[in-house]
Amino acid sequence: MAKTYKSQRITGKLKVSNLLNKNNQIRKYSPMTKSFSESNLREMFNYFQMLYVKPNVGSQGKGVMRVKKLNHGYQLKTTKITKQFTDISSLSNYLHSSNSRPLIIQQGIYLEHINGRPYDIRTMVQHKPGGQWTVTGIFAKYGKANKIVTNYFQGGQLVTMDKLYTEDFLPEEIKEERLEQVEQVALQVANHLSNYQSNMFEMGIDFAYDQYGDLWILEVNSRQPQFYPLKWVDRNMYNRILSYAKSYGRQNGY
Image (tube, rainbow, N blue to C red):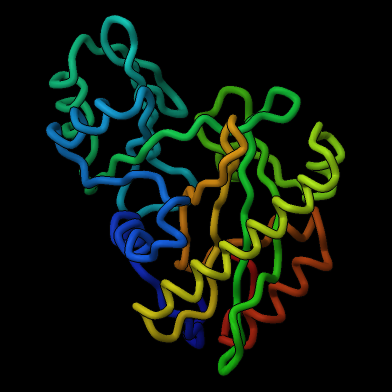
């Protein structure tokens, strides 16, 4: 990161979740999130069949684990392994012993699929010093078939929203409504979070629609969100994001 980089960040997924829940308009889009403990794991499984366990501080989909309640026991799946556990205590002990970093537990979202592939939507919101928050880019990330995350660095594929929706089955008016909704909520999130941390100039917000068509905020990344793969997907969008980034001292999309 260049020494001239001026954008501040909010550190920790749990802190971001707690701040989002302070806003009545945003709260409905925010998955239930708790710090990791056996008691919280039990409580979350009382509400949900599937959960995600993640490092509280992390990016690029690294260290993300999916846990499911089965008819007899529990399943843990990572990008590399799948394990079965007979009870929550053994699952919790494994998660605790195999991770040195603080973890969070997040409500699992069953993502909408297009052509059999899950996807989510990355929205870049930025502003130049003295300016207002602006949505400078919206694009989609297809997940790889054998992965539990859609992240580009875990084998996901970046596509433009136009390409995504040419493969979709939704009516045109629904597509337009969704783009408007994502943009509106992204700006609400940026304006709300920047009330708690000064000198924030950029955020990469990951959204997803679930199987029922409801919108969720999967993650808010304010720690220099990367966008350089857009070079090969939409050069105009990449250049627009980069022009904003340079105004607060960032020199590239890494």
